[in-house]
Image (cartoon, rainbow, N blue to C red; front, side, top):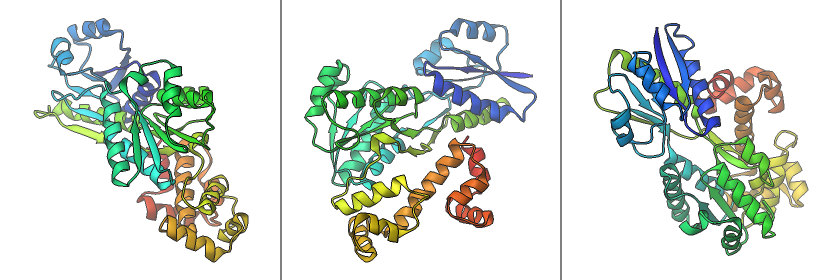
Length: 373
């Protein structure tokens, strides 16, 4: 029997999701089990290592220097942290560069022109997201404001004063849901409505921060479970064949969940804005593009021309894309049956839904649900 110690970090929600992924991967390995060690129980981990009670460690390690002074290198190690770059052991972590790019494209796709990024310069993952966000936003011709270092560490009054200087409307990308909650509350305190005059997007999909914000927060979902599964699979390989050259695996964010804090479109054409806002709240109940045109007070042909001019695609294509993203969310976040999701999506025959979904994702809805839970 082999034992893998999982060193949890201070973000309990993230750690539990990673632990779930590890245990899912180990469920078919009866000769390997895991034990969770809290980040403040290092002495217990040292004791287990001293008596040979641990055969491998998966953890959010602070850095190479910490590893040199603490960990017994005779056991396999896999880092799942992102507080700094670690080069001495294999790492499985979030692709934060991809997360920042995803946030920028999300705002661009929804018509926001002025954006701001709220980040912590001393946090490696936060800085990586900021850099990629600004790069993509700038390449698309969008304005991107960076929060000054002294503001992010100050009180809510100074934060509000800085936010008040931003253009109206503005979309704010916050590199954590905690920062998103702070920013959302600060906007409300200075009289800016969300999302009408300010959109707020966070990272991590923290239910606690979303509930405590004035509006439910839109957020980038990170692949914590997949990180756990990948790390467990890697350390099992290392039991048999140690990695002589540390390798890094960067897993992209899963998706963006749109909630109240960004549930509005900001294109230069108000008819397109109204159409997409209606579409977002009637994804499955809307009968078709004729209904959408009627709601917007224009002809179907006029609406199609406006969409082509603003988005470069027809309203029907935009509707299909948004419906598909919502189907993916329902599969990964809810227990609604596959048959019910098929019917909600407008498919009378589940087999047609299966085939259409597989054509887009490369896997069946059932496989998608299993791999994203």
